[in-house]
Image: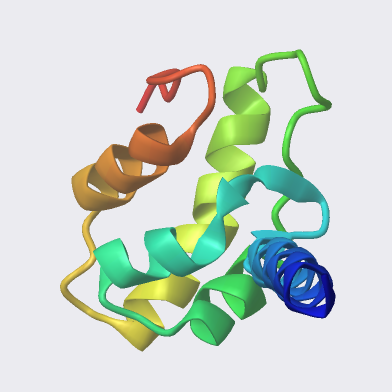
Length: 109
């Protein structure tokens, strides 16, 4: 009986640890985006992506960003990311962000 209890406790600890890792890799104000995966696809560190994304203003959940908001966010994000990795192009950024956007491709630029 003690072995079963130990296994259950270990399994629960593993689930809690996995949830903590996932939470740590999501941007606080954009929780649907896995920043570690995005950073890897852009060939930068997770922290570099988080730092660059800090001043981006995502559209509220369930809404699409206006063209003006998209352009303003891109004007903040792209130059910062390019400082971390000069090979990041506008097209590459759009491709990577669209890959992880829950609703798919929405960028208009």
